[in-house]
Image (cartoon, rainbow, N blue to C red; front, side, top):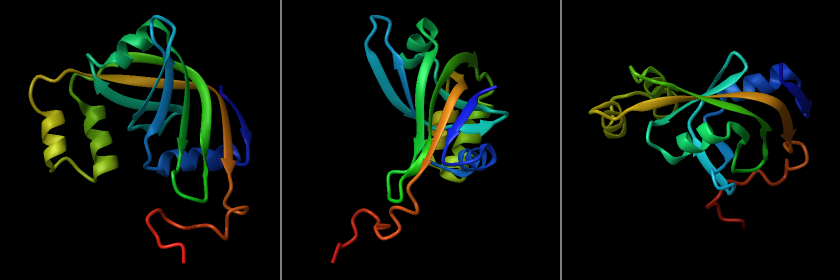
Length: 157
């Protein structure tokens, strides 16, 4: 069972993770011991993050060598809020690309688009990356930033 700390209750944090449609930023180690970070689409359920990627992606090899990870799910626009933590990743085949299809629906609104057809079609092998958190920390600067809720590209005057 993961440990939750920070600004939100467990229920608030889980609601945020289920509803937020921002990628998860995943940090891991490369086999020579370097650091690697990437963003992946995810779905949060049953206390775990579920991501998909190509079977031959570098991150698959990295996670197979060392499954310890750190992550962050947060928004890039004020007010800043989100969840970060650490945990363990595991890899399994996504033979029928069901998880990939679910992620395409979640992030792109469906599978009737060129990106979905390219990713779901052909001989592309997919894997599932399951992230089981050990520790989670939440933050929310909504109250402190209530006067700076400006979107990028907006005219500051």
